Length: 160
Image 1 (cartoon, rainbow, N blue to C red):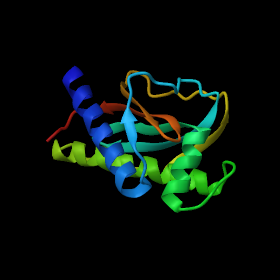
Image 2 (image 1 turned 90 degrees about the vertical axis):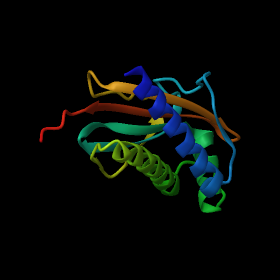
Image 3 (image 1 turned 180 degrees about the vertical axis):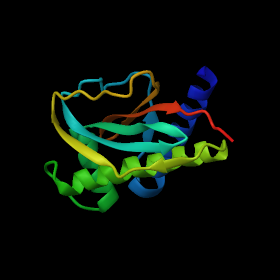
Image 4 (image 1 turned 180 degrees about the horizontal axis):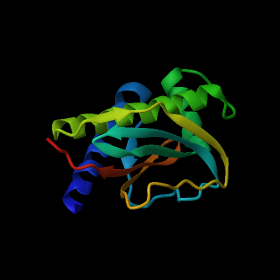
């Protein structure tokens, strides 16, 4: 299972770097020194559910500054605070990342369906869920700030 986690982690890193370089026009780097903890002091999280042969969620947890800068670069606008544009942009970001993971699962004959993303904004919230799931957490840093991509999943045995 550790090899699977490493492969998925590498897929997440490659997907995030591609999205940021081609659509957000910002350098982003994987870091093993995560500044985004399980409980965010203030920030934005967007979560998308997975179904099919895999049950789980992919989430992006961002510091407020990272969410604002990501949205500004993605949409070409200037922002002062979290608004609907930020919520939509971070929702679209998690959707694109989920698409990259879906391709990885599909390449391994794992049918994966994506739900519609949900975005949470606030101070001092905590995310959780999906007991017994395999968790892959990948922290990043960018010129806008820190963020983490997290995949929690359970693979279902196929029956023919």
